[in-house]
Length: 250
Length: 207
Image 1 (cartoon, rainbow over the protein chains, first blue to last red):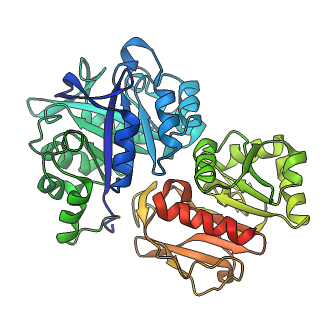
Image 2 (tube, chains in turn blue, yellow):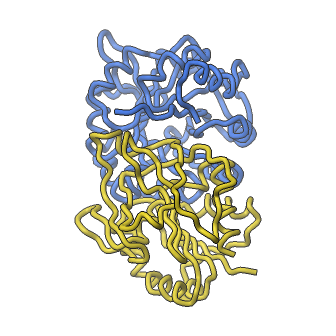
Image 3 (cartoon, rainbow over the protein chains, first blue to last red):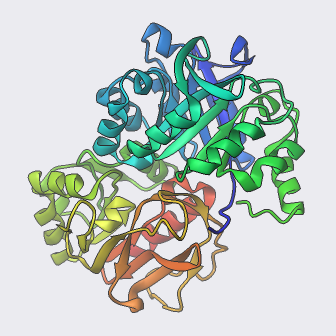
C-alpha cells in the first residue's frame, strides 16, 4: 500500500440554512452561512466539503438542495451531502443539485439492502455510509438521528457490512470526541483499520494542527469542523504543518 | 461562436460541469436531443455510475449514433470520468460491455492489492512525452487533481496518452487525446483552479 495524499474535508452541519456546531452532537449553535463558509474554505485550499443536514432525518424536510446548488455553482471541489436521504429519488435529487456523493445513515441502518440498491443505481463512488459511533465499555455502538438514538449495532461489524454491501467510503464520527477539540478517537480508528479496505473519512475531535498530524498516517480523509468554523486554525496552517513533516498534501 | 453541448443522459454531474463552463465563460448548452448533438462542434460527455447502465441509457436515447455522426462531421468530444471510459471499445465492468469505440482499448478494474479501491482523492498528473498541436499543457503548472473511480481505461496505444497518474507504483492512463476525442479519468470540474485551467485550455484548444 502506498500512502495517498491525505484529504482535508470541511464538515458543515446545516440547520435551517445556517451552519451549526455542537459538542458531542448536542447543544448546537449557529456559526455561519453555508455558502460563505464553504467558499472561504475552498479559497483556502480545502480538498472537499461535507454538508450534513442535521434535522432532515427527524422532520423529513429536504431544504438543503438550494444550499447545494448555490455552493456547486462556485465551489469546484467534491461535495458530499447527508441528512434525510431515504430513497433512490432523494439520492438522484441531491446529485442533480450538484453533490458528488451522498452520506446515508438512518435509512441504511433500517434497511441495509438500501446500500446495495443505491450503489448499483449511482455507483459505489457516490455512496458514503455515515456512522455515528459512541463507546460503550470496550466496543463502539452505532447511533443515529445525530446521536439521539441507539441502534444496538456494533460499529466495526456495521462498517464491514456497509463495505460489503457496496459503500464507496465510510464517514465515521466519534460522538464522544465530536466538538471537544481534544483530538480524535484513535482507538476506534485503529480497530476500524483492521477490517476496512475502502476509504475512511474520520470525523470528530480535531482541535489543533498537531491533532491532524497524529491521525494522518492511519486515515484517508479527515473531516474538520469546530476549529475552522471558530477560526481557531486555518486550512493553510494545517497543510503547512503537514508539509513541514513531509506528509504529502494537495 | 462554437456550439458546445453537455450531454445529459441521466448519468452525469451536469450541474457541476455546467457551473464550471459558466465560470470559464463558455456558452454551453445541456441537451439529450440527438438532432442537436449531431450538429455540435464540441460535445462534453460526463458520467458517474456504472458503465453498462450508462451506455444502455445513451443507446436508448440514440445519443451513441448522434455522437458518432458529430465526430464524422468534424466535431470534438470531451469525456469525463465514466464519460471517458465509455469512449473506449469495451469495459469489463459487470461482464464485458461494448463502449462507443472512439478510442481503442479496454476499461479494466483497478487492482485492490496495489492500493485502495475505489481510488478516491487528489493525485498528481504526469505529462506524457507526447506532444499535441491543438492542446498544449506544457506551460501549465500541474497540481493534483481529483479522482474517484474503480475502473480505468487502458489505451492500446501509448502515442495518445496525455497524462498518466500513479496508482501505487503503477502508471494509469489518466487522460487520452486522439484526433477529435479527448478524455479525462479525473474530474477537472472538481479539481479546484487547476482543474478549471485544464478544462479551459482543452476547450480553447479545440475551438
